[in-house]
Amino acid sequence: MSLFESLLDRLLAPWPWYVAGPMIGAMVPVLLILGNKQFGFSSNLRNLCAAALPTSRAAYLRYDWRASGGWNLAFLVGTMLGGFIAAQYLGSGDVAIAPATRDALAALGITDFSGLVPAELFDTSVMFGARSFLILLVGGFLVGFGTQWAGGCSSGHGVAGLANFELASLIAVCGFFAGGLIGTHLLLPLVLGGGA
Image 1 (cartoon, rainbow, N blue to C red):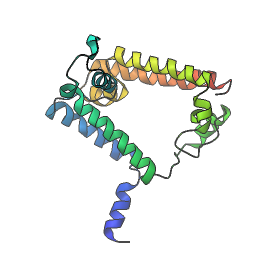
Image 2 (cartoon, rainbow, N blue to C red):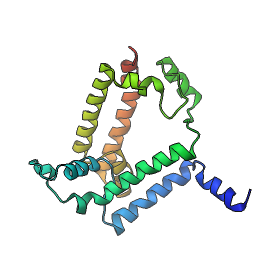
Image 3 (tube, helix red, strand yellow):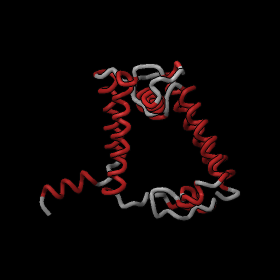
């Protein structure tokens, strides 16, 4: 194996959190200070709706999305493309899950860990059921409402807001973690208790 191939293999292997995390954090000063941009994904839904409905009567969607959100849509597309390339060409296809987490999920009826997501939750036969559709509808509404009410999503508050020392972002991130813990330990067993 040549030096180039060895270096390429190292670059394409999953990077540890202590390398990837600071690299993500290093983008914040570039976006905030040099580019005068805000970071986050939740605003892309508004940008997409404004782009798709340019003659909308809703004042919320009447703005120049190209000037304020075009770069963020490009960032979203790049993130999706990067995720696709990583999943299709760079990864093994399986997610590394701790044995204790596997045992906890198995107790809830989730046992297929052969892909990126459990088949018991994301198989088409499960996704198109009435119960799953209702959960997705309510969950999607709550996520949309929550990001609008909180003034941003977890990536915006957790990465950019905290890096900018914003108290509102600290409160929002604490709320995200509390909600995640409640969802994991109280709601998930309740939802999966009767089968997906």
